Length: 214
Image (cartoon, rainbow, N blue to C red; front, side, top):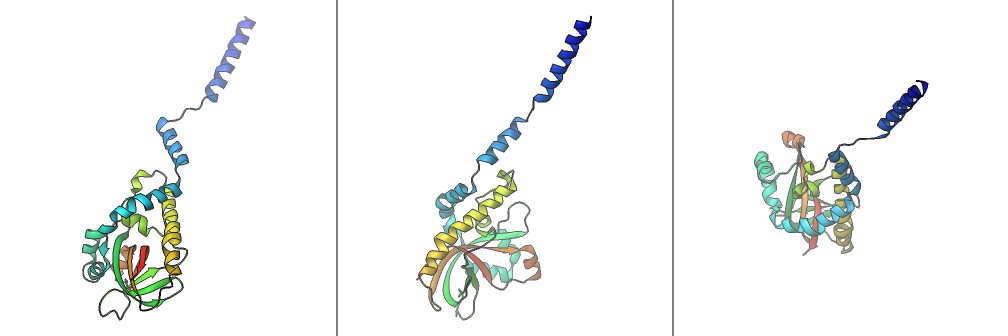
């Protein structure tokens, strides 16, 4: 009888330890975790820049048209051209244009795109550190719903920004742009809902993805 009790107790202990040593995971959770671990924001950004963004640049709105809409019917500007990921209150626009450089500062150029080209209309950012998500969001190519981890979604912007600082801004500044020069650009801008409601838009800030002197 004592042996039976010993065996029963031993079996119970083994069963208890076995049960608690087995860790069950949801298969979908495991899959998502592996995808997160395998995701490389730098590689994603490189593919976005080399293979995706270039295909939509021709669809960019002319900045003069966008400025006109900003000044007359902001809601129409949003409806036609604005893009916002998720429920964001910041709208991004893919833009293009050309104009005359009126001033050159350490981190930006002021450019006039409307005749008689006497006053600045846009501020093209040329600093070596540019935060934000303008290019990513204005493209409409990166779907936030595809990323269960928002940190990865935001890392993409950082990597994209590094690319255009290195491959667009630095080479352009090496050409020594001068006041009075004509510049052609593609880029992105963002306008918040708060600025829209307060009508506080003075200059259109442009994050450049292409810069050329003419």
